[in-house]
Image (cartoon, rainbow, N blue to C red; front, side):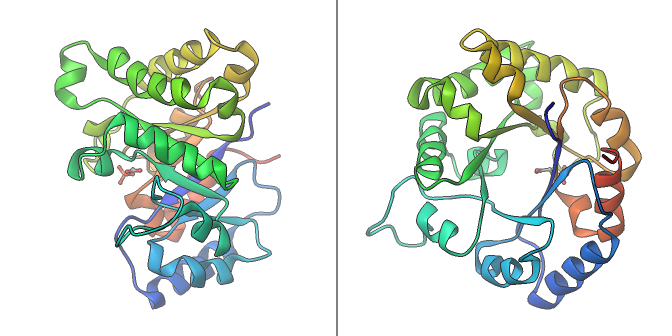
Length: 252
Ligand code: PGA
């Protein structure tokens, strides 16, 4: 059984006061025995403080990015060891905003994945095609390549301590989510691709869907057999919405 994950990617939003309010509302509404693991991903500068707010609660701390290098003269970067030091358990790597706005290559993303695991952080590897790629029928080629670069650098066993997020670029922040069927097709493809190397790892790896997930569409997306929860952007900034998305994973 794969335990679902619902992760809130706050991106570059919020203030200290907003964060405190959001965490307070989340903690107040979080049910006992939620089926899903609950993660929040605040901006770097707020990690330590949010980490303090969620310590000893069911909410886990994740970062939005990490440097591929371990330490040294890399102005502006934050290392995996630093993220671990302030209490992160997870880190997003290869978010499409990093790939497309900041030109991160598949190779750099794979190195970030390895850097995170070297410090026992669980990478949440984002993969996904752009609209033109989907329209050209290239979704599987693109997603397969993004995945393979990581598998070749780190080996399939590395996925035992990782999470994948399928995030079609055209669905992120657009209000236009993939349909549950579109998501399921790509999730199944991802699992098959991993399964070509190791069937057990493929079966155990959690594959989240991200891209305009809301309270209104979460349940039907999460009901698909290969969708193991979600990576939530905009809707994670509203406690009521985020809690409803979490509830869409059911209870246990
Ligand atoms: P969105 O973002 O939910 O606002 O579409 C998802 C993401 O970028 O992780």
